[in-house]
Image (cartoon, rainbow, N blue to C red):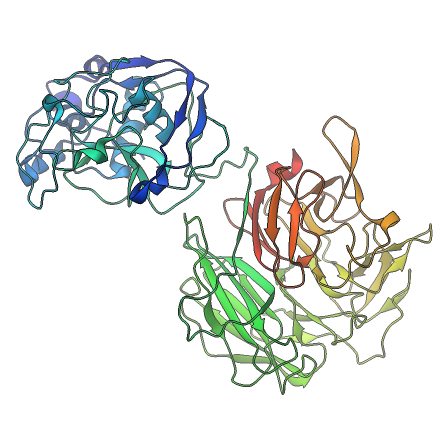
Length: 636
């Protein structure tokens, strides 16, 4: 959004504006960012090397009232609030992060240049100007730079005139004090690794501010000191300065043309509220996005999978947050087994929740209920029974999806047996009524070329194809290919789920403690996420899969991988091990336990669930961990 102003009523023209904002050339280089991080300054650690690979131009001073009010004249009404920032050449304050961002956009359009806020790393690099003392002036600031540097309940009126105290060796004024300055980055923890042009987390709750201000103790003015504010906040301590650079850095928007693979983080977080039941076995998750930008996951928690104590818990990753919230009770019918959960955003302002409810404590005699939320999963409607018979074929599997006809497909295990296959509940009227097209036939023969009324393999992933047919891949019921090698079964229905034809896929079968994902991405391809083998049940000679590097060479990888099909499952031209190559020691929870992720190894097993949020980010949850990457990363 750009603000258009008539300059006829202002004495300063836009052509004079660039000359009015004096810029200083900051050379490229490297420095060590942060401090030891002692006490309340823990967020300044670890000290880590940062390379600023580009030169840039930075405002010699903070933006002043006169400069800002050419853009937004109504701001003049705030001059003198709390007794500060009264004059034309005083640093502007009482501006939010978005106010500062909009000024940069407006200025960029006026000057046909790329103005923006500095990144946090650029700001500290420019402030230090080669120094590693507390301040660029040494281990203290001179009295000339002091503007009532104490805890002030009521602000002491001080001058905020810019450019009157000694500059640093780059020629920048007021980097210690005067006013805090907005930076571009979301606030987040530092990495210990060397970084090149870091731009902070992809999202967050707070934006970084730097430099400290008047009426604030001097230790908050240090070069390394980090502060942050809610982006909508504005007060008399904070203003900003601008950067002009050919490098247009964006940290708060997922750029679909940029490859992302983020650090895996746990989503199963033990509740702080001890009244929330939380057991030793947390498993079988589902995940979806919310219209407000949050991500929510739900899963069962139990000591015994076939016990009556099982509950369904949920957690939420708030938009912009770096970690999931502690678990909360999501759904529980007292003293009934609750096996099988799926949550699904219908892209029409509602989230659906499907759950199995047992008559007793096993996971065989289940009915199916459905709930809806119209407020991003904070409250839910009463349970509606959509499959009333307590019977087999009702163990809900995560992965609810739409077909091209907007039918809703909800897969369910056809029974507690690992070879029972998968049933399919279908709604053709937006979730009002549901039907399993099964004709009551006996267990089908899941052999190559055979036909039946049940999907081959339990825990199946199901996806609608462009020609109106339905494809599924499942666990168990392996089918031998032409070479006599067991493969994951593929099932195709061309009659709306009534009948299925079975064939061997090109993928290895999976087994206990493993569940695959099959889904269509927003960009069009079909995504499969599965496992190369079972680490305990696959012979050593058959373990792993061959993956191709960008240079055409191959290597053997083990564990969770992704495959992409651009022709509705006829071929899978992209196969990629789900790791960024960094070595990590991780806890996969449930049946997975501890494992090492590195360039040749990904998570060895887990119950997978997935969703792709509107920004293009693919969210995979296993039994405990949350992975985030995008199509661009898969295709690299």
